[in-house]
Image 1 (spheres, one colour):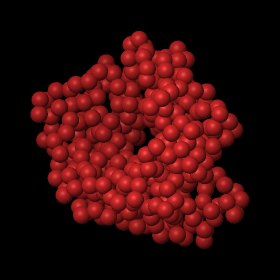
Image 2 (cartoon, one colour; image 1 turned 120 degrees about the horizontal axis):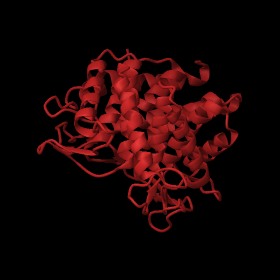
Image 3 (spheres, rainbow, N blue to C red; image 1 turned 90 degrees about the vertical axis):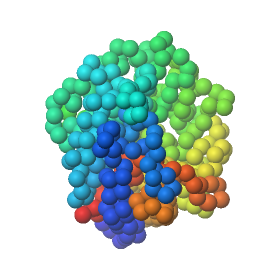
Length: 389
């Protein structure tokens, strides 16, 4: 629904959608697509040139999601062709018939490389879900289930979740599990197979029992082999991940009404907003220490999109009028803060970072950031009714 509280949100969303439709999607659906070697370009220079990178399975999967979402949002570009182009790249370069994921492909040598990588597995499952949603090719679901089965056979941890080495060794990582949760929720929208609900339940349980610090409610990133927190320099808290986990947990709790999940999501987002927000910029900073003091005050693009997604989710849950006004104000501010990254000499590209003084940092634009941007657009579209067309 649209109320007077959301007038500013709708205006900022319209700016974002105009930029996506007229600049970003045209750029990344042309310059960002590799029609010779398959797949998608990983990065563009600050003047819009392609960078010859190794291609990652995770990026192919993300771009499948991007162009499937663009179609759903009303973009009139060649979404179906681009989704199928991405699916072909996954099947040809990054997934064997037996369900082994090949994380990287080297175009110049025409070969794949890399051992087991849980992050890439999570995104391949995610990309296959959205490829299946577009094509309804049953082979894609069968392949996804084969991948999940091989993960469980070779990489499952007794206490729950997955390791990245055999036998398991530190660090175990929370971040790939976050994207496995996202993949499971995506598959639950298009498949009735119980494997996806079981995966969702396992990861939510692991998050609540192991990833989240019982003392202050924050979510840690790196762990020992039995999911005890890995202390020292690697014990960091990322505000962007607090927001992203909060959004995913809210999606999960909507499926089963689990009040403990809702409480954990609320605390995670409070940490992001209270400890992780640079109020001068209205942007989340990169990292906190374990005691929630600032560690890296730079503000990368992607956490801002995850803040938007979480704000939308909490706005939709909130019934009290005063609280809705506050959340709508923060949401409009966060969209405007995101738009600042798009003030770039190449139409449709962006800056990845601002430093702690709000000065942009010149570096290549990462295609992978479009996954975060279009994810925020999906949530804003549902809230405001705005479309790309």
